[in-house]
Image 1: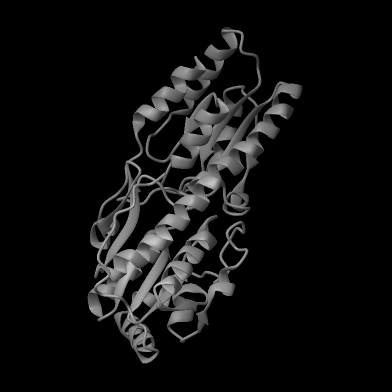
Image 2 (image 1 turned 180 degrees about the vertical axis):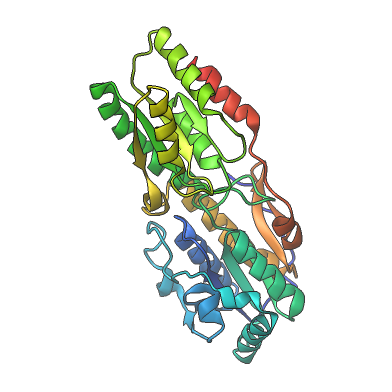
Length: 334
């Protein structure tokens, strides 16, 4: 269980708005529920913003009550819907959004999302008299300032469940599979899934792997009597068709690999127990931090403690993938 700080509630908000932005992630609904229930317990009004920043800039808000979040803790996606709003990059548009909040008597905003969403949250707080708290909602787990993000555990388990099924076919036909998981800039999902499924190799954006090295490892495994079937987990990377290109390169080296792209299945589904607890604790803690006067910070988890990190640091710094995890995966497969 997380160690949760306690504060004096001496700056209780009049009303809090909450929105989910960017790519959806399993656990956003428990986070929404955590904010709503914690705020209502303290007599604070709560408004849900529909479709992220796109809804905020047109004033698409609805007051929420306890019934608004009944039976959503087990649901994937987000009941508030989500969107990517390019218009919010304009400072004048952000000022317009702040004015809409103030007109409704809302002085605080909770934003659940990834890098881009938290960037918008920081700019809104820095430029306008609105207190903002960010929560890390992304399956990629690539947010600086937190060990874990809402949705990561579910995405890993969803991918792992699919790969366990793919392995049955791989073994039956003695086939090699390249399984692509999400992660354009981050290899966290690929690394954790690769270790958990016992993948022969893991390919991530952070570290270049030459096709010759992959071929050498595969041949070495075969010589050790590990059979001709196997799983290579590949993070999607920034280049479209990366996994298919890799399959073609392997074919040029007389190694045939089938490609399976898991895609958006990793974003959906009921959140795991871990993600429900994480999201619920972060959502409720966001209200505690607002009541204590905090502003322009993200609430995350470090060493099982609920902590805060300035949003400025969150968007300026990057979270590094631990290379020793990849080395450990290779060691375990030897």
